[in-house]
Structure formats: C-alpha cells, structure tokens
Image (cartoon, rainbow, N blue to C red; front, top):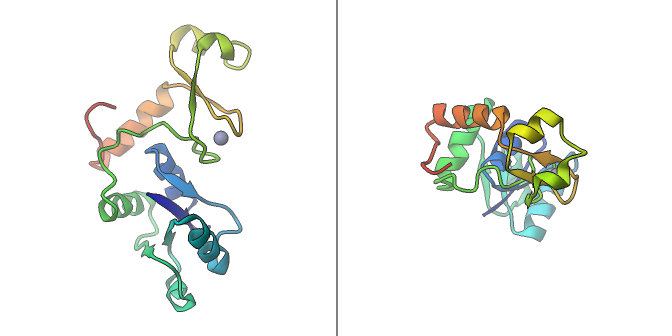
Length: 154
Ligand SMILES: [Zn+2]
C-alpha cells in the first residue's frame, strides 16, 4: 500500500514512515498536484481537504482529526496496517527504504558513544542519514504502544 499525503499532514506522514509505510509528501502535494501524483504512482490520497471531493480524485481517505495521534489511528484502522513489523525500515525524512550498514562504515559519522553502545545501524541511500535503535526509537515505540498500535516482535 502506498500513500500520498497532502501538505497539511506532515506529522502524520512522519509517523506513517516510522511504521514503514511508503508516503509521498511535499509542498507540491495539494489540490490537483496531489491528485496527479496519486494517479501517476497508484497512491491512496490522505487529505484533510474536503474540497478535494469536487476535483474528481482517485481513491482517497478523508482524515477526520487535526491531531496526529487520531490521524495515525484512523489510517492504521482504515487500511489495516498492523502488525507493525515494518517499523523503522524507512527514512522518515525522505521516504527511502533504509539499508543495513556495519558499524565500521559509519565510524566517522556518528558520535563515539553511539558507536560503542549500538550494534545495528541503517543508512538512507538517498539523503545519507544514519539511523540506529537508540532512545528515539524507544520513545516512538512507547508512543505507538500508547496508541494501542504495538505489535509483538518489534
Ligand atoms: Zn532519507
């Protein structure tokens, strides 16, 4: 399942990427730009824009809440996204799939403390951001847990 989120849904986009979902997002994605991108790439539109319905859009999901927690719950339920086994597989900034990378290869790019305490690193092949399962992932898991979205095995 692939999504195209309108520009009002930045926080939702980030969280969908955290749980591994493919979400196109950017300033060009609103109104007809959003519709064109969704058609071209076969993406389900996520929007807060009720007027979109008048523009003959492909399939879309009207996001009801303006709070990201409610939004995330709505999408997970509507699209049956669980279990969350794909969490932390995608770059939250640019949507690319992450690649595992050895600690030795990131030596120059992460703080020494991180290098000595973490074993698993991932690299975004597009924006070169490096990820590791430290405290920020713990906090995100906690957040997902609080939403009732946790699955065993992550
Ligand atoms: Zn990236």
